Image 1 (cartoon, one colour):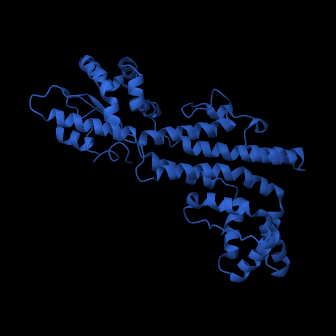
Image 2: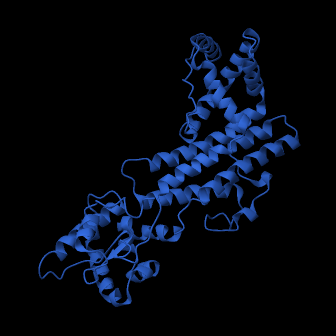
Image 3: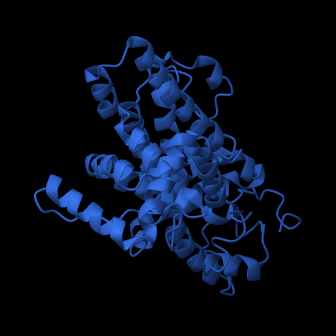
Length: 360
């Protein structure tokens, strides 16, 4: 395809990159937290007796309530760590009481270690800090795993996610994923936004100032590691992907061709500018009709492209539109065949929507 259209831009699979980034971020979890999550589940996994003892402890503490099932950490930890952390955090008091009793009743070293870990308020604080961040990674992965994702919207969500992470620990003005100097402008641990719940509990705790600072530094270190793992896997052409939002139906009506042309000038030959401008103005008058029934930018342009291909296929037709298909990175013009008709038709009919540019 590159040989037929030198203007094609490769955008590697953002979904796979996100999964790798999540996996790497989870790898920087403190080892004792990883142990706590894994061994708490293992303690109950194959022992109905222990499960029954825990249910009784939970019911005594929570007025007869029934505990939620604990979640194990599977081989692909980034898929399971978020619900595992949530289930432990929501049952912390009951688990602490259970292991305090199990320590003396079973005379087991694992029970002794887990009892000490659940009794340590620093561990509780750090789990409160970690859980919402790991939840955000889980949310992003679910977005990328949906059956019919819109690559343009996914890119926007990913950039917002990274910006939100960076805003926690990076000085304003440098908290952008395309800023190569961001690691040189990390905020002091006390100035970082580590979460309202975490900071509130930290302030109310009886820890020394040194311990409070140490916890804050550990939190900052984890967020920096998360940012680093995500940023290094972001597509190199973030600006182009962001500019694709300009091709949303609502923006076509809003922005002039001159404004759009500035972002996509590299894809438009100078000999085509005048005809493209005329056709863009015509497209602005038809955008509502073409957008009807479409749920995403890629669906809109696929719909528009089908009409163009059918129009071009009509002998003597002179009503063609010039279209840019975001999912394919293609700018295609009736008088300048950047793709052969068969390939263009396949793009227009959605056969290649998620395979050409968005494959690894």
